[in-house]
Image (cartoon, rainbow, N blue to C red):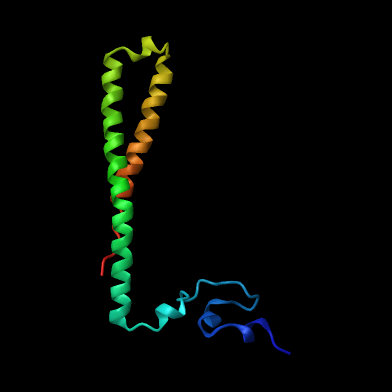
Amino acid sequence: MTTKEDNLPKELEDAVDKKGKLTGGPSVMPPSLANLSEAGFAKVRHQAILKLDTRIMPCMVLMYIMNYLDRQNIAAAKLAQIEQDLKMTHVQYQTCVSILFVGYSASIILTQIKLPHC
């Protein structure tokens, strides 16, 4: 009689426990990447990181700039008496500022993440 472990592909043998659940064992690599040489793998890795950088970083920079502008504009609006114009309480104004600060902080943190390059 065969068990679940006998039917597993070679790549999964070390990563699956006796109950058939994935463990923290070695990472499973698709066969298309497993057959690459070290140089080929490094080239594919570099291309993937470059692709991620070119798609994600422009969005992060735009988000950072927009949050910076919003932070400056809310201060200018306070001087122009936005609270009286919108009939806001002091607490409501501070809530708006806090929400802007969270977005600004998140954009700063996300732009500081460094991906390992080849």
